Length: 84
Image: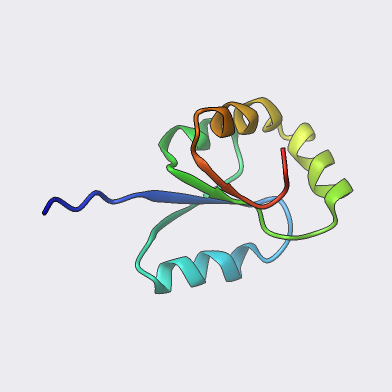
């Protein structure tokens, strides 16, 4: 059986980012912090940590992450967090 390693990103704008990163690392999942549009290029899934939805939406737009996030979701990749 061939094992395929997946990479999960954690949106690093607000919320419990460190806790999510540590939890995934404990599970031996390859995890990266996502701060820039190009960070989406290597991901198989994304976690958006909880927080105040107005603030996270504003931060996503301010950082130029809205379109990369929408494209990522449209490609059928997993997103855990806010509805798009």
